[in-house]
Image (tube, rainbow, N blue to C red; front, side, top):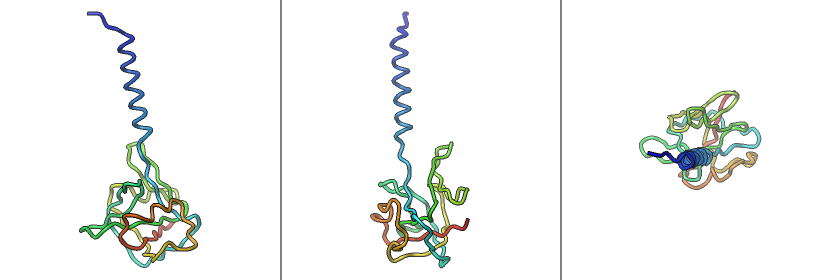
Length: 140
């Protein structure tokens, strides 16, 4: 049996390229964040699972089919993918939430996006949210 090294090498190379393209094209999550400090207040606590909506925005899916809530995160909040592939929300130098996990978020509802928010990724505040925007209050 003769092994065609060029064919094997080509197949391995094609597989590696496909794996690299797949890993590079994985969607990253988006957050609606204020461009400056906005006080969401400490009026209440909301809980649910942080999920990724079709437009790649992180929203809160409340328990018992209570609906989906759009979230306005504080200025300086970011989302990254950890070494284990989980998407994490960072604020004040630490991880404050993980996509796919249950979260309890302090803050309060805003009837509309606060005028002084000057929101990054405004698309994350529209669409599937069934109620007003929840302004997340995270302490540093």
